[in-house]
Length: 230
Figure 1: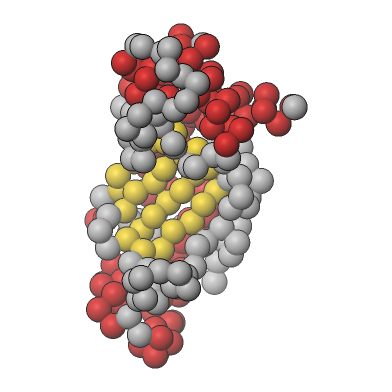
Figure 2 (figure 1 turned 180 degrees about the vertical axis):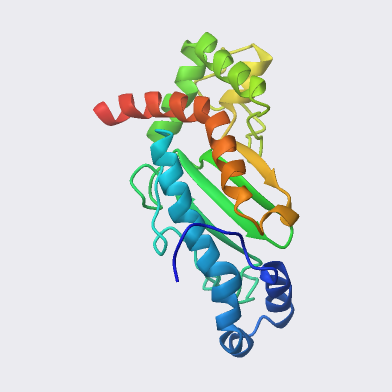
């Protein structure tokens, strides 16, 4: 059954704990119905409900109840960790509804934590260079973005930031701009209380977060549009 998101099942997190303990294909297949009812189907409903709400808000983000979800199976072909299953389930909404775009909404329901991101994650080299140049050549615009995010109770995360300034930007000396140019990703994050994933109120919470993060979407899209124009 599909319909508006009404919350993840009460056994969603306990299922992930049990799956992580067993890490067994046989156990997973025996409990697949529980996985679908408690986690997969609700996440699919959440993707569809957010797609509708994001469209109403003009956010330019959409998804598909099947294609937007990441597999719970891990790709262990080149990994030292051979556990077959993830400790989380996640999904992505993007401008074109695929997983290949930048400037996306990402939601993660997991054992360690639950969270949502608005992200330009590992942008391809030309776009990342354009973002860094925009910071260097239009610092007022970037500082305006930071101020707008701060006003909205958000800030750029620093995961993956380079320790050294990338080549070509050595002349930048302002500490805030140097720190920003060293980013490999540009994203903001909202931590979700695991106790709050079981009701439809999660939709309003995530729409509110995405609206507060819109300055980052607008900033990145303006730069991306110029890159794609060439």
